[in-house]
Image (cartoon, rainbow, N blue to C red):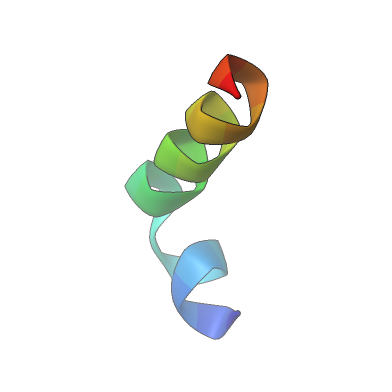
Length: 21
Protein backbone atom coordinates (compact mmCIF):
# COMPACT_ATOMS: atom_id res chain seq x y z
CA UNK A 1 0.00 0.00 0.00
CA UNK A 2 2.85 2.37 0.84
CA UNK A 3 4.39 1.72 -2.56
CA UNK A 4 1.25 2.97 -4.32
CA UNK A 5 1.25 6.20 -2.32
CA UNK A 6 4.97 6.69 -2.96
CA UNK A 7 4.63 5.85 -6.66
CA UNK A 8 2.12 8.23 -8.30
CA UNK A 9 2.57 6.40 -11.62
CA UNK A 10 1.42 3.15 -10.00
CA UNK A 11 -1.68 4.86 -8.64
CA UNK A 12 -2.54 6.22 -12.09
CA UNK A 13 -2.10 2.76 -13.63
CA UNK A 14 -4.33 1.24 -10.97
CA UNK A 15 -6.99 3.94 -11.44
CA UNK A 16 -6.90 3.47 -15.22
CA UNK A 17 -7.37 -0.30 -14.85
CA UNK A 18 -10.29 0.13 -12.47
CA UNK A 19 -11.98 2.65 -14.78
CA UNK A 20 -11.21 0.59 -17.88
CA UNK A 21 -12.60 -2.52 -16.24
